[in-house]
Image (cartoon, rainbow, N blue to C red):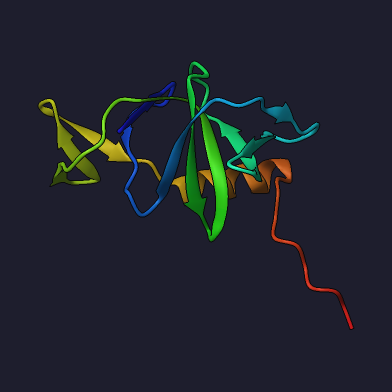
Length: 119
């Protein structure tokens, strides 16, 4: 369960890989992405607009991606609800990390998989 400027959201364990203290994030000029070194790997970072408390390392479309501007609220098992999970008498909606990565990439020309050399 995370909170950002977008509100409170649920991130499934299959998507969320690691929560890390916020390392230095270097902006990539002309994009909505930054880059950070997390656990010895350079990863793309998307800022969700909240306070820079932590990075949530996720898998999006088969790539590692970090979300910044989040606060981790809690982890655990939650009752399923339409579009998310039930928590504190309300619904925390699923955060679609794949959709966020695709929308930022298509608008800003973000990172992509290296292409195969042409023969």
